[in-house]
Image (cartoon, rainbow, N blue to C red):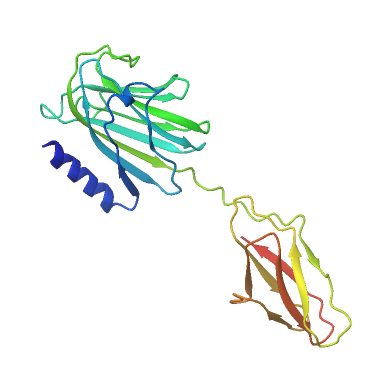
Length: 248
């Protein structure tokens, strides 16, 4: 029964559009914050994790996560797997690395005598999920519950701010082409940055006469900028003032 439920849970998470992994029952290392291993590492995409663990009388299970980033949303559910999902009667909590309890839940609706909670990260650090038995809100092992339970954990990364590129220090070098000698000249755009680290695009805004461009990956009038500066070549056919714009 335990293996069947574990296989079903893993199949469900694997079929969903998130990254999935298993949570190991690492007795006796997971009995305290100080010794519990980090089992859930930060990921850039939404991710889910599942495991079937055993809770013994006087036992407490801690699962390390992180370090998680500010704005990440952690969701966890402990589901009893015995006696029609009513045993063991679990309680669920979130602790920081210093051992302070930050969140607590007992008997969440819809999961029998299991528990469920959501927690939004307010400081970038390692956190620990704690699972104990009914009557032990301090997670010190003061309970008489025993049996297998399923633990499902998901982490939704904080959304990107998607801020626009910073062009306040942008400049062209050189800033003009003269004399009109029909020769290609190297032009650089300097000082363009993006707060989110995204790629930038440089586009020419043409004036009066066309400017002939030569550069790699030049598609549809846009040139990708992947570093602090980008070089391309331009040739004026006549006196042709021009400007460029930056897109993120």
